[in-house]
Length: 175
Ligand SMILES: [Zn+2]
Image 1 (cartoon, rainbow, N blue to C red):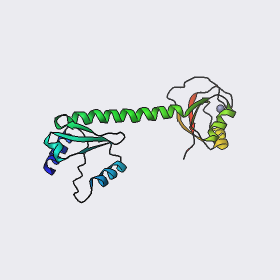
Image 2: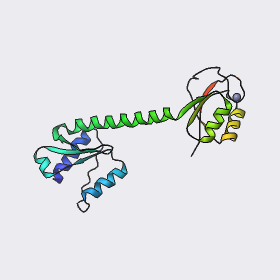
Image 3: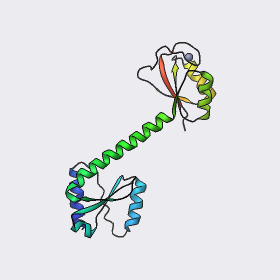
Image 4: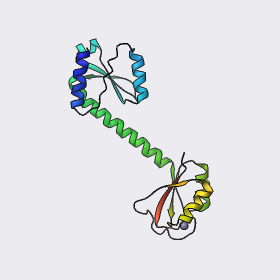
């Protein structure tokens, strides 16, 4: 069994997949599962005698039930597909979260209230003046997090001074 596990790990590594073989025999399977879940391993492959005899292993996604049985000769391909799906889902969730928590402002009072509430990112035009940046920071304790590579709405007025904006600034609270 251990030999097969090492061979399988080598095969998966050759396919470009990072593999950690947990061959500790003094640790129960449940404890191993828990430990690797805590560490964030996205996929767990379990080897069992009966399944191996059928040429199968059991594959569990950290973020999803239930486990699935995968034929050994399809394992690398299946894991690569799964890792791609996991990556895409995490990215989509993060992008949706960011979009849900970002609002645009042109009014100073609304911008300040929103930033004081600390409920997300605020996007607003900025004239580029350090004085306007300092004013918002003093009032809200939020800081400039990033500037758009290209202003979204060139010339839109800076909500602090009313002069034409040269940047599209994203504000947020630091934690
Ligand atoms: Zn300004």
